[in-house]
Amino acid sequence: MAHLLGSKTCIDSLRVDIDDMQTVIYEIIGKTGSLKCHSWKFPDKLATDIDIKELLERYQHGKNELDNQVSHIVLFEIIIDRLLLVVHGSWHFLYEIQAKLLPNTIDSASTVNLQTSLSVGLVVKKYWNKLLHLFSVLQQHETSQKRSNPTSSLPVRSKSTVNSEKQCQTIETSFSPCSSCLKYQEYLQDSSESIINLCHLYNLPSSLAHHRCSTSATCESFNDMTHWIDSQSKDFDRLSKHLEYLHSTLNKTKQDLDSSEYKCKQLNETNRHLQQIIHNEKESKKKLEELHEHKLIEIKKDNDQYQWNLNEQIKLLTTQKSNLEQRLKEITEESTSRGEQMEKLELSKIELKFLMEERVKSDDLIKTLEEDRIRLQTQLDVVKRDLEE
Image 1 (spheres, rainbow, N blue to C red):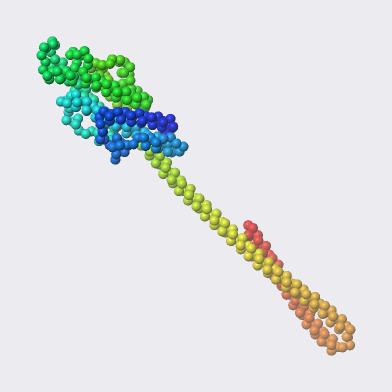
Image 2: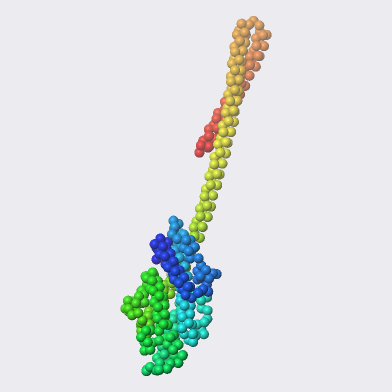
C-alpha cells in the first residue's frame, strides 16, 4: 500500500467515506443524544465537536506530493476516529434500548462510562461484550416468557402479564414477533450494513455479507440471530485487526516522513553552507584579481616612468658627448692651425686630456646606465611573466 500513499483516488475515496460515516454519526446522535467521548485523533477535544467539513477542506489532494502523503495519513486517522465514534454511539444506543425495553436486566457494569477509552481494541471488545450481554438477556427473557405463559388461553389475565406481552411477545403467544426483537433485529441490520460496507471498503471478507445472502427472512429465528452475531463478531475482529495494522502503518509512515523531512533540512543546511563557502571563495578570488591587476598597473606605471627617465638621461649624455666631440674637433683643428703657439698647444693638450678623461667617464656612465636599463627591462619581463602565470 506504500506506493498508493498520496494517491488522488485513495484520498478522494477516504473523503467520501468520512462524509458517509459522519452522516451515520449524525443519525446515531439523533437517536441517542449527545455523546460524551473524547476524540481518538484529537484527545483534547470531544469527538462530536470535531469540525469534519473543515478537516475535509484542509486535507485534500493538491500539487505538493509531500502534502498529499500527509493528507492521506491524516484522513486514515480520521477514519479510525469516526469508526471509534460509531462504535461508541452503537454501544450507547444498545444501552438505551435495553434500559427502555428491559430495565430490570441492566447490569451494574453496563452503567460504567466506557466511552472515555481511546483504545480501539478495548472499545470494540466492550461493544462486543455488550452485544453478547444483550443477546443473553433476550434469550433469558424469551425463555422466561415461554415458561410463564400457559399452554391454554386464560379468560382473565393480570395487568403485569398484559404489560409483559406488550413489551416482548413470542411466536407461541402472537402471530407477530415482539417489538423489542424487531427493533433489535432492525438495529442489527442497520449496523451490519455499515460493517459490510467497511469490510468492502478495505477489501476484507465479510461473514455478515455471506450470512445476509444466505437468509431472506424478515424476522429471523434464534439460531439465525446467533449466527448473525457470530458473523458480526468475526467482522469486528477483522476490522479491529485491520485498523491496528493501518495504525501501525500510519505510525511507520509518519516516522519515515519525519526522518525524510529531517534529512531534507540537513541537506538544505549543508547546501546553504556550501553555497556560502563558494560565494566567499568567489569574492576572495575577485578581490585577489583586482589587487593583482592594480599592482600590475602600478608596477607598469613605475617601470614606464623609470624607463622614460633613463631615455632622457641617455639623450642628455648623447648630446653632451656630441658637444664634447665637436669641441674636441675644434680644439684639434685649432691646435693644428696654431702649431707655433706651444704654450697654447700645451694648454690645449692639457684641456684635451681633460676632455678625454671626461669622455671616458661619460662612456663609463653611459655604459652603466645602459646596463641598468637592461637589468630593469629583464626584471620587468620576469614580473610580467609571473603575473601571466
